[in-house]
Each structure stands twice: as structure tokens, then as C-alpha cells.
Length: 476
Image 1 (cartoon, rainbow, N blue to C red):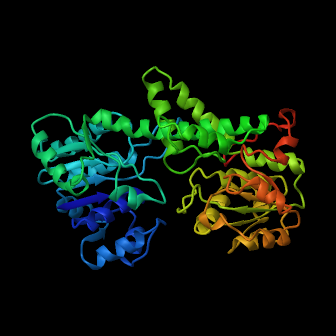
Image 2: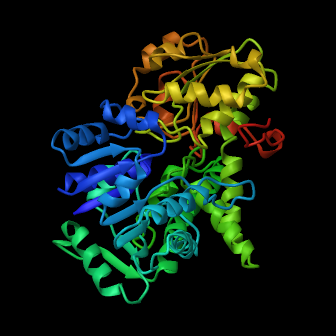
Image 3: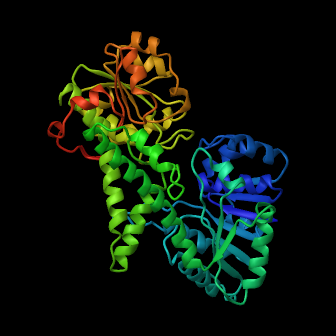
């Protein structure tokens, strides 16, 4: 099948590469000529395990093509996926300017019947707005408005595991409204996704508005589980309980399950923060409130500061002369994505309190340097105290404390004896609960996890908690 994917970002590249891997003829189009040139030179604008190899393989076999020519791309595809960004606006709502701009371009180039698929995460009602934008351009050209059908097919891709999520999906949600084109469009999309339904049906058909809401509801539910467990972890610290025991105890309940029950420094990335805010704003636009989702967002903003509180509780508010090591900068492992990453808030606030930071991330060093330079553009003297190094152990040299921020597998089993010898003070503040408190205690390393029962946690009391620290990367 001939497929066009508009947008060569995270979702677009994964979607295009995976469809090409299944034997389809795919064109990826993007308005950024530098990105297209990089892709045509066998480069990759993002990091995702296995994606570079998959793209290279399908380019060499002629199944995927990259272009900035929208006219040719629209002509090529029988099915056109819109996979451009929908960032948050100031009020939290999704910014649809890129989606609607693409819709207008499709309308200006459309010559024969196409299925237009919203792959981007968009609010309820966006399909209608896309339809209106395309129809408007067709009317300007004096063409009939039944040359296309707009479908909702939201993505459910986890960064770091996106290829596996696409190729082995739990479900495929397709929103298609009844009308004159319902049967041929339904048949075409059944053909497109036939490979995924060979052993059992994974496609869930519904109306367009329900499909649009399904994506937001799914991400809000997962975000809720994370924030709930973070609150349980914080309570565990105060009560002397162990959140890891609690996690295993409730996860064994089949009604709950084990997924997304790990306490930590809060969620980040391009999906959960943006989508929860958009869902909250959508409800407000309808005169309603998403009280649970609003609480989830509030808890997550607060949780991003938990390691800051730990540092200040241990060393005081003035961190001048202290060197702190940070392991992990990306918002999660197996990605270089720094959007909404907790590390940005942690590092910025530590630097502004006078600390020297030595940080390491296996993949996101370049992106982290750019993000933190932006966050600290008004504080060059603080940015000068940041060093991003090439090895985890190098970051720990002469450190007064080590902060674990991202749970990369390479951090799971360090040489603790070497680590202890390198550090000025053997103190680990573990924001991802990678280590067992009793093991570190036996080695003579002071340790504090998130909700893990150990000596450091039991020494603290609620009265010692400092004033809240801003969760915004741009404000302290």
C-alpha cells in the first residue's frame, strides 16, 4: 500500500519506518529541509532503539523515501497520516496550528480520493476541524468536497520501546464515522492493519470523537497511577514503610496489576504532561472540571522537586562549594528526550544554590546541554558550574552526593566499592529506587530512596521539610 506520513518527528518516523518494514511504500514529508537532508544522509534526528537500523534497511530496499515536497507526498499516498507536533499552549490546551496547516496543504494538493488519518494526539473535535480546513481549500479550487475521509488513529507508543509497541500493539484504535465512504475506508484500513490482526483481532473500531478521547484518557490513567504511587512513597517515608513492598503487595491484585506502580521523581516527556493539561483544559472549555487529573498534575509537579528537598535537608540551602553528581538526564531511559525532564528542574535549582554539577547520560548529553542552557540563559554564572561528562564514574569523582534521576540499565549494577572510593562523601539519593537500602548500608554508603525504609529516611520528620521549590524549569 502507498502511505504518506506528514511529520518526520518521533511519531512520524516510527510510524513510517514500521509501515515500510511491513512492505508498504512509504513517503515521509517534513517542512524542515535540514531534517530531510539528515535522513537522506542516513542520519537520525532522534534516538529510539532500533529505529536507525530499520530506516536504513528500508531505505536501501526502496520502501521509504524522505522529501520536503508536499505536493508529491500527497499524490503518493492512498492513506495520509498527519503526525506533527501538538505542543501545549499557555492555558494547557493543545496547539493545533501544525495539524491544521498540514490539513490546508493537503487540501491545496488533493487530486484524488485520500484517507486522511490523524495520528497526532489531538483534542476531541479536531477531525472536524481538519475536515473543514481541507474542504475550504478544495472549494477555493472549485473541487468537490467528497475526495477524502478524515479518520482518527491515535498512537500508543512509549519512547524507548516504540518499535515494539507499533509492531506488537495491545490494540489499534480507529475512529471512523458512518457516511458514504464508510465501507471502502473501513476495508482499506482493515487491509493496512491486517498483519496485526492475523492471530487475534486487535483493532477497536469506534466513532471519531471517542477515538480522540481514548488517547487522552489512556495517558491520564497511566499518569494517575504514577502520581498515586508517588504519594504513597512520600507517605511511606513519613511512616517508616517501604513503598517497594507496598508496590508488590497491591500489584499482585489482578484488578490492579504491576504496570506503572514505580515511585520516583515524577513523569516527564512529550505525552503525559501535555496530554493531562490538554484534557483538563478540554473539560474547562465544556464548563466542567477534571478534579482527579488536576490533582495528578499537581502531585507530579511537586514530585519533581523531591530530590531537591533531600539535598537541602542534608546540606542546607547554601550549596556553595559542594559537588553533586547526577546520573541520568533524559526523562526516561532509552531516549534522548529532555522535554519536561525532572533533571532540568533538579539541576537548575541546585546550580542556582551554588552547587557544582557533574552529570552523565548515556544518550542525552547533547540535548541536555541545550535544554539546560535555555533554562539558565539568564544565569550564565550558574551554567558555568555544570559539566556533562562522558562516563558515570567520572561524574562521581569527588562528589558530595550522587543523585539518580533516570533509571538507565547501565546504572543498575555499578561497582559500589569503586564508587565509594571516588566520592568525597558516600551518599546516594536515589530518585528511581534502583538499589536496596540494606546493601548500601552494609557497604558503608548512606542511601535514601523514594519511600524506601532505611536509616536516613527515619531520621527525618515532616517538620524538617523546606519551603516548596518551583517545578518550572524556567522559574526558581
